[in-house]
Image 1 (cartoon, rainbow, N blue to C red):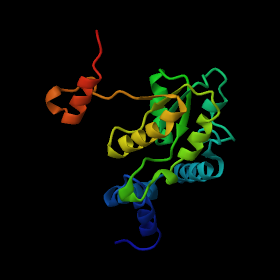
Image 2 (cartoon, rainbow, N blue to C red; image 1 turned 45 degrees about the vertical axis):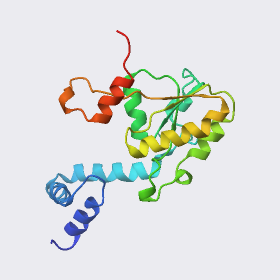
Image 3 (cartoon, rainbow, N blue to C red; image 1 turned 30 degrees about the horizontal axis):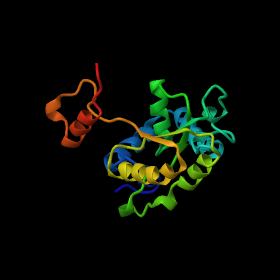
Length: 197
């Protein structure tokens, strides 16, 4: 629609996840009208993240050194690993303040329709960590969708023969939600996971 640099910027922004054509256009025109210092800061942050950020060699969370801050923290227990799909999931679990163990980031979930199988994830690396013999519990915190459930089931089958306790995060109704708006699967899980008060 536009020509030259502005169309190139719109096209590149449109390739970002969750950014549609209208949002890409809006962002591009915001950048065009923004103060040059703000644009340079944004460009610098993009370059810096590509130059400095890598994946932790132990858990595959994002890190700026060989290991992430969680893997370097000596106060955390080495006996429990929480398996998540993406680094953003680590942040979500950490915000709860409830987990003091270690993590393992798979880099996605099993999704045959997208051509993602177990070999495309960091499952081999997880099995290597588990074979060390120090882990007593593996918490499966994959997303509560079809792909996450398939991944959790696959991992549970792989780990069970090792004698390690395998648990799955409970799922159910959100705080502040209404029963009438809950889908059948969520409501069913809420009944399965009920506890005494």
